[in-house]
Image: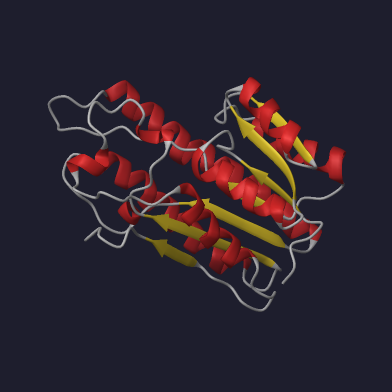
Length: 238
């Protein structure tokens, strides 16, 4: 199915999976509304990506989802794709995990993501159709020591996507979750030792690898739904 002329709203769009997906969709003729914290970077993206509007700020602000949809309608007159991608990671053993960072992760990964998802699907259901895609994780299907809180946020995303898929079946709104393994992104920029070293994964996924999976789900014809798509580095055992 052609994506030409559609409009996508993407959170976490300044870098990583969000930016790679924006670039892949732009190459398909999709117009974009990107959200992130860093305005100067968003402006750089808008200058080089055709048909790209941007909004900066806190993704957890309750008004952000409505403002993003309003911007899409104002600039392009429609919203066809909502990609809930903004996220944080806070991990560590019981004794040392930063509880404030953990709480902020929960606020972004669950509260903000859920609010964006519900706001988007309400709009799309009223409009007669659309696609919601959420960034989950392989750790939304299994857990490991020191990452229980992060995995819990991604399990929550899995549960929401499955419930929304069931609720919206037949409405024209499709709900998908992409479940990446280890990806080389800014998400781990503050780690003293890179996760690929700790986990012995010399070649993690690149953001473009995940973006291709997202585009694959979106390009399916209307009668086909890809409810979940897991993408792993070929050497990652879990």
